[in-house]
Image 1 (cartoon, rainbow, N blue to C red):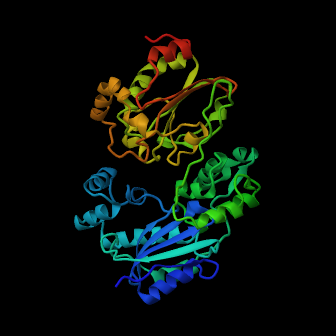
Image 2: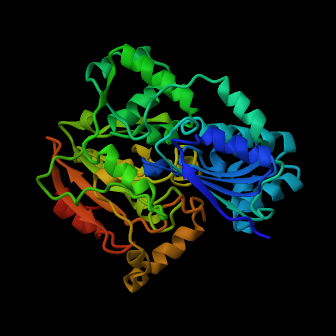
Length: 435
């Protein structure tokens, strides 16, 4: 007989209390936590007294925890291509002896702590437990719930909000040489108006570690909390009880010539860190690509690499932005050794600032067939990777920024292969002639 679902208010039963009760009763099923700040909604797979799966915005992709510490990217991607889900790929890697059981247990523990630390004591939401058999979805060996909660109780809790953003003061850049690498990465993320959740996703820090870094930077006068303006806490709480969860990335309207180009700080290939405003006094061509191994974008990138000397002669700087993480860039576009900065925006923060959108129709448009020879060539390049890095429906875009930091030209792709003819780009946009 199937037991009925159980739900309740987190003001009466905290996430910690709910997990303790599930462990005591040795229940099996799916546990949902829905919060006032709906972007942090969390789902867990439990069986007996163990936790065997987590879907949480605070937890990085498996590849970020496995590559390159336990295996190279090719081994992991081969396993993922052979299985529908990550659990199946991990079971396969364990059976092959590539991923030892002890290592898998360690990574499961890390993921569980990353997911639970930010939510364990929250009371602004509801929980729902749905009893069901989870054998297929449960990733053995799982993590003991009670020992996990004991370990979390020993870690320092710092009260920071996932949706919070911080202002970075100008003098912070001047004193950045005194900061460690992690603090620099946090500063760069905050300067790009990322929320603390997005900072955690980028840095892969535990929530308590991030909290300690934030408090230190605040005490040093480098950052200051910005008050939210987009949605009230009450409005967010009203949405917490909704049965569906549709996270959305805030995308501003498209930029047009005359708009001030949004400033950003991104890191990328070879550890390069770029701030757009540092290019003031020069024209800059920014190219938003799809992902590092894209067969649509990389043939085009090859042309820009070939033409790069002409850009230099015309005093035009090139910047390429990709929706892949820094560790993936060398596996794709990095193999072409581009002479200009290639930057990573895996959280799509700068894509959103520039209004660079996704479009399923743009991906499926019959107009793409007119450039299919180039795409086929892209699949044969050494840069090709079948993993889309979440950018499969991304439409590329190109922007020319003038010496004062304003948009001079903008081109948003109507379909995936809607690249401007090189002659148009060189002659009309940049006023130089191709050779």
